[in-house]
Length: 120
Picture (cartoon, rainbow, N blue to C red):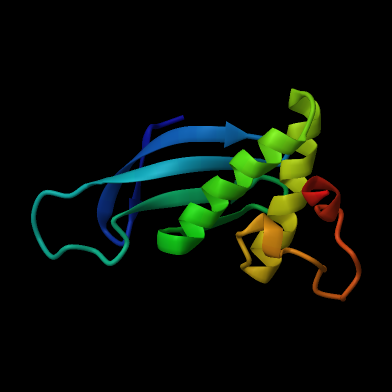
């Protein structure tokens, strides 16, 4: 696997931060030399390997994503439990675009979400 990708014509180096059962989370750092500065310059990429979907987040959403991963890690016992809880969190985060785990109360149908168990 290469350690770079192109977004909007700019080259980004890829550093894998986390790999769960379903998702990869990578840090993207731009290698920008000349030309016009792109809108997206640094952030995170979430790759859903089951749905073949990739999104990039930056700014407050990126901060909330990292905070939420740290929060979930502190609440779960064991690596496998953390990976499973993170998968449940990311499924909802990608559907609702709510990346702060403590704000995730219900899924889009209004049912209590699995991730609530992480919060308690």
